[in-house]
Image 1 (cartoon, rainbow, N blue to C red):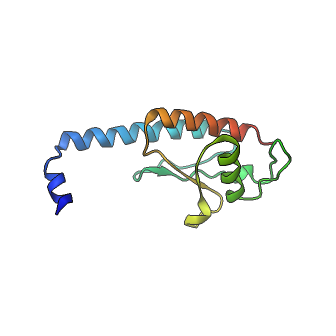
Image 2: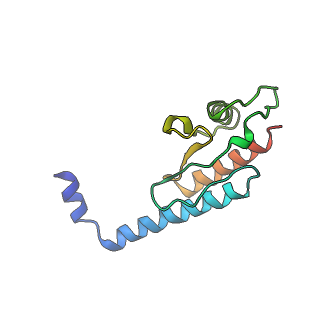
Image 3: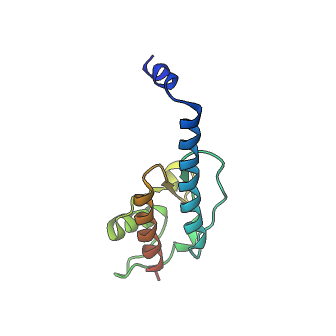
Length: 124
């Protein structure tokens, strides 16, 4: 009942503005990801997350010599070394990917994408 009541007070223009805001954030994250060597992904048509293919980074090594064997290793490395929280794609049946949400502020996304880019570039 509360959801129905809340939706009655949301205008079509409010919904359109929110959808555009999500689309803008999606496009920002998508643009950055597509500029990163070894990352591949299709343009999603819905949702508020992306599943980039990042398997090109499997077999690479961190500055301390640890091997990135899979999506779990990559997500843990990016979290521990660069402060970027991602979900391994294997949790969704996509082990060559990770899941990144863009349902946050533009400022948080700018910071996260900078950290992500730096983290992937640091792997050798």
